[in-house]
Image (cartoon, rainbow, N blue to C red):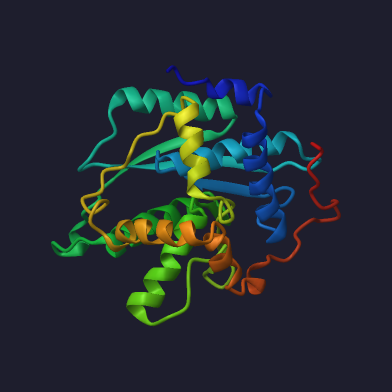
Length: 265
């Protein structure tokens, strides 16, 4: 079965379930004041389904708002595992269609500073370092990541079961005394939604190379969480609600503009 074109969504042919996804993203954004008028947002584009879905939602949502914000996307091309040329062309075409400036930078996944070590923590830290550096170069204060509700739940379970801490990733995370923030607009969206989007539409998904993606703790927890969801289908939402994220609500930066309201009914 041929996939539908994502260009149909951009043109406004949006089915109800995709509309719910976009509005759900907007709901999380508005709840935490993640994005406000005049903001410049750098999307951390991994090439996976989640970051591509995030870019789609932010781009389409921007058309509905009485205020504007700037979207740019950065993708890290690991030199050790380069992205095939045919996927590069598709990615550039995708972000161009969304009206998002897209940049791909070549970086080493295993820098000399690792001293031969490599694990999920070091990889994530290295990726974040590069993102922070690029954000600083353009004086960008907001980095949007594609972490979703399942990521939050898995992180909660990892910290609770293996580190004796009840903590998780935050919807809004502050760095450098507030000079930079990571925002996670998909934090209330289930992974099944972004998966369905990638299955139904021709998003240029390319799975980043990860030597541990099938053996790490996070992947082992997925079937556990799925089993819990068979007992209560709102398991993920309950775990999300058990956290206190009140301090994650960002202060208004409106400069006299009215708060964003989605015009679509």
